[in-house]
Length: 252
Ligand SMILES: Nc1nc2c(c(=O)[nH]1)N[C@H]1C(S)=C(S)[C@@H](COP(=O)(O)O)O[C@H]1N2
Ligand SMILES: [Mo]
Image 1 (tube, rainbow, N blue to C red):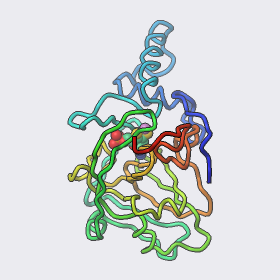
Image 2: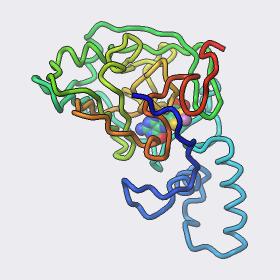
Image 3: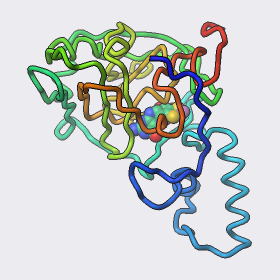
C-alpha cells in the first residue's frame, strides 16, 4: 500500500488511542527532563518556560526526544511511555498469535537457540539523526512467522510492546523480508533495556520508529492496524528515503 503523502506529526497532540488526557509529547518530555512533578495546571510564568523548553526539544524530534544515551554511540533515547520497562531471562516472553495455526510464546532461550542473522546498517530516524554502521542480530521475523504458520487471511502484522503503549505494524510482505529481525543484540551485546531489550524489532530498511522496542507480541492480522506514530501521520510503509515526504536516495 502507498501511504507516502501524510504530514509529519507534531509533538503534544493528545493521544486518541490511549486517552490519557495529557498530551503525549509534553508528558514524555517532562518525564525525560525530570520535570514531571510540575505536571499540568502550573502557573503562567512557569508554563511559559516549560513551553519554551518543550518547543525547543520537540523541534529536534517530535517522536520522543531527549539527550544522547550515555555510551550510546550517538543514539537518542526514545520512549512514549514515561519509564524504561524491564524484563529478563525469567519473565520475558514473545507471543506470536492472531491468524496463525500454531500460536507460541518464546522465552529468551528459545529465541537464542534459533538461527541468528546479523545485519550492519545505518540507523536512520525519520527526524534526521543517523547512527552509522550499527550491527543488530537476532532471529528473522520470517522464521517466526513460518514456524507459526500464517493463515491465508493474514495480510499484516501488529507488534505490541511491554511498555503497554507503543505499537507498530508491517504488511506481511514487508515482515517476510530477510532484513526484518527480532533483534537480541545491538553492536554485538545484548540489547539494553534503554534500547528496547531484551528484544526489539529491527526493521532495517525503514525509519527507526518502525523498530518497536520492548517487543512482546507479534499478531498476524487481517488488515494493517497503524502503529503508534502512524496515528499521528507517519507512514506505515516507513522506507528510508522513500516515505514521510522524502524522496531522496536511501543510500545517500
Ligand atoms: N516501545 C517503543 N518503541 C519505540 C519507540 C518508543 O517510544 N517506544 N520509539 C521509536 C522511535 S521514534 C525511535 S527513533 C527508536 C529509538 O530507539 P532508541 O531509543 O534505541 O534510540 O525506537 C522506536 N521504537
Ligand atoms: Mo524516532
